[in-house]
Image (cartoon, rainbow, N blue to C red; front, side, top):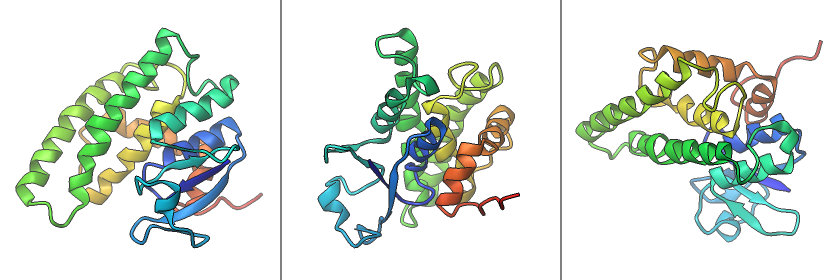
Length: 207
């Protein structure tokens, strides 16, 4: 299988999950401006939506949308406990949280990255984002991970998109539990491996 990604964007989440679960993937970087892959392919021919992540499956089909890819990878390695079993209440809680991150946090960042977005719109989006992060901060003040005591696909997704805060001048210091969460996730070996592969941090030197 091959994961099409761009450094530091939302495709970081499934990249982290693959490392967490020990799933051997091939990786191909995508230039999101030119829509060209590292090997010179037209990415629009791979994923007509034009954005990452996209996961090329063993049978040649392509699966898109981060939450769907995250659950697919987790189901390949149920022993990793990155996603709860299908049909359980816990699985629906995961889907609930993935949906919240996707619609209320991930998409709220989008206009903050655009130079054409008016200042007043950016201010309103930041205020909206703060309200959504308040809920997350309250959850993380009571438990280490979004779903309880175990790291899950939802945590990888939240970490990936929340890394964008610095780039849009959004202050996370008012959310102490969320800030501590970001540090906790960043320290995980699988997360460091994925980030190093994407060039987001320097790879650790071998002892």
